[in-house]
Image 1 (cartoon, rainbow, N blue to C red):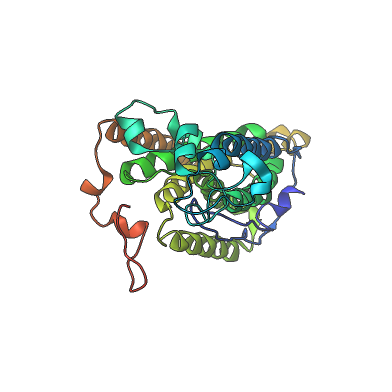
Image 2 (image 1 turned 45 degrees about the horizontal axis):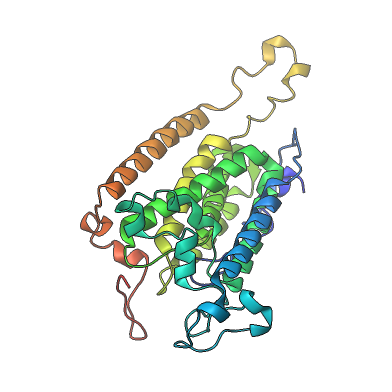
Length: 328
């Protein structure tokens, strides 16, 4: 696909506990590409996630470990790879104890047992086949396109740091549950798409329509994240991290920069990027470093995010007559 298709197309998005969908905003792009990258890192991420899930199911070994309290193992013909009873895990996956053993995000282990590595390992784990499939479809649709546009280094950094940022914010607010999934990293890619559109505003056509469409997609998916049993803090943390990283890693040279070697010296552009792109880059670097530093200090000091933001529980669950919201 060409760079002019960056914002066209779509993706299916999954949260850490449920299934949502989104599509990228359509846009007309008028900038000719200087490089078209071959995507290999994103497919490797997909393979790695699938392999980790297979290992998790092997470690889980439902026929030997399940005592029948929640029901019988599902798909017993798979042997030790069979799934936990649906009453325990409706997503067709391992038990929560297996996920914890494999590196799921758990506040007590991160803070009190100094297992900060869980902030990274949790983004490679998935609660079940449904969870894994939806997240990997999202990664394929979004990640491959972005990697073709910007290369594996920049997209790999955005993906990993966004997943880390989502885990940090999640740990600040969610204490009594484990959390797994790549949705924070995927929201980071979505946030990077938005900041890429903003920082490269002058080289797009139909920019207002593209911006409104992308904002609507983001709003819908964040709203779905307010349903019970969904870790919307991981979504928000990943999105904010990816949004800032997009300003840092995804600005494009201003129109004409790549062709200026064919122009007389007197009419060449003086700067590769526009002034506002440099400003956005500097501000984003500062906000990202300061934000992650403060969040990590608060986390490892054992502070509860709700003590500093009493209304933030509405970001992850809105109580209705059909369900209640609590930290469990």
